[in-house]
Length: 197
Image 1 (tube, one colour):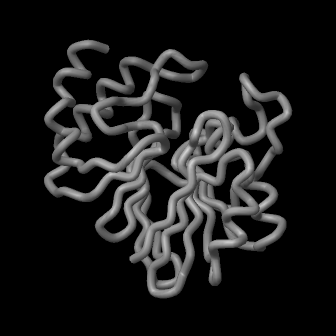
Image 2: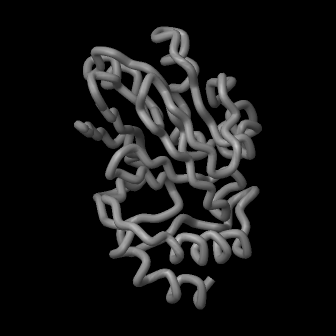
Image 3: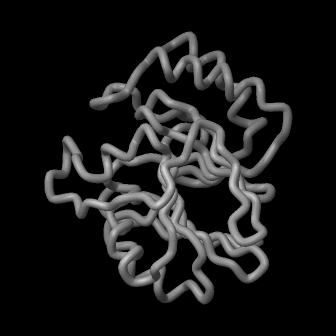
């Protein structure tokens, strides 16, 4: 598995291209991501959203039009793809697959596992491919996603952190902003965040 990353836009939102067995998965194509993505793919098979916030989905529609590949978005965030409270000029996109909570897919022979961790937003999820977890805005290195936005929920974030604590394996975590970490590394801070939310 090969992973390419490029921070996009004012919020430096990480766009990832994950290549497994010659198949390219595009994760969270944010503002201005299209040109970089097109230069760095050879066999694109899917666009995957960790959640629906504008800085993670801005280039969804443009890439759908150019690449003719399916878009997967957590079902509880589909509404955010066409109605952004912060960005009324967000290019609207429509997912081909509205992902259910904790749903797993076989996409051209590659296992893709969505794991639902709401709180930052209703559909907020991580995406696991191989030994990598793409955490969107749920977990960062020594930090967690904000829970004071429209549609955010502090109570949901607490429940998600409790669920995250129970994961009994380790993977490298690739967040939506900033550098990498691991599941085990961030699990040790979960109780602190739960207490302080």
